[in-house]
Length: 101
Image 1 (cartoon, rainbow, N blue to C red):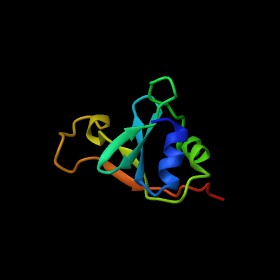
Image 2: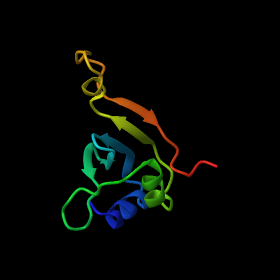
Image 3: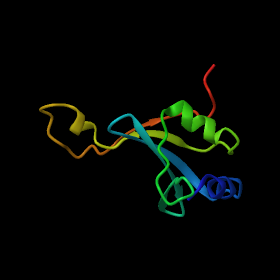
């Protein structure tokens, strides 16, 4: 899903929420939840758009209607030495879609 399609779907009220997925190496991917399915934002050429930060994501989303927006660390236990995986799942932190002042 490209940014234009995301914008159209959001304005039509079809987007239930957004997840900004934190990946290893300081890369973030944006996923939109629409009708029970996740759609990753792409660069228009079929590749996942790699965002640099929360602020980069906010800049892309600033004109969209407000909706639930989360920062997701999908594998928290992988980043901590000696901690075994458990059933807690991903760490989800609510974010504001607007810039902080």
